[in-house]
Amino acid sequence: LRARYLIACERIPEAMALIKSCINHPDISKDLYFHQALFTCLYMSPLEDQLFQEVLTDCKSGIEIICNTEKEGKTTLALQLCESFLVPQLQNGDMYCIWDLIFIWSKLQLKSNPSKQVFVDQCYQLLRIATNVRVIFPFMKVIKDEVGEDGLQICVEICGCALQLDLREDPNMKSLIYKAIAHFLPNDLEILRICALSIFFLERTLESYYTVEHLYKCADEEYNECTSSVQNRVRFELLPILKKGLFFDPEFWNFLMIKQNCLALLGDKA
Image 1 (cartoon, one colour):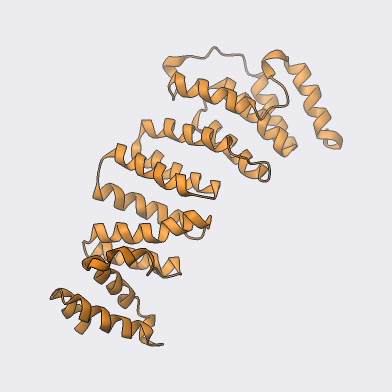
Image 2 (cartoon, one colour; image 1 turned 120 degrees about the horizontal axis):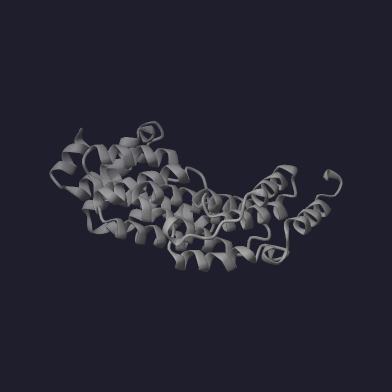
């Protein structure tokens, strides 16, 4: 109660001294209120820059603090707190609680600034500091959910950028990116075929081969810009990136040749 009173009166140095004493107590420190109150004090004081250094190590506790701060109507502080947990996770490549943090961050960011363009720009800024390529998936989820039709094109561009990274040590991740592109562009037969072949080369499974066979048995379709989910520019930038993952260019091979070579790669499974 005393801590709340001191904060309400904006007697921040006194409040911080009391709160830090409580945090240092082995029993009282278990109450997350004091950790939340410390962040509030830092936000209200000239020591605001220390906010990132004062972060708790446990993200689950941090998420609870962020949500409690938001319930009190302190959206700006909640957003800053969320970023203080999210940024180190991105920099360290740690996926612990990352889906929750990115989801909460997206809601707070849009509440703080409803501009979709600002939101996308902020997503790109966070993606640039990420060291684990797997964070593209939660970011693509929030972009697709929050931005609408344009969000799908942005997600395809993010996948294209990710494929240009060195993923030789992580074939599963590369396969997931191809699957994501196929999911985003279900009506583009040429891209579906390239993705299916690329997935097959990475996985060498009967299931992935059956997908290739199914797609090549479909009647050829001319690409129609009017029905495409993405701009021509994005599609034609994506095609050469996708083809880098192939052992051959399927444009110059008929399905019989593709089948023979795929079955050879399957070995005993064939």
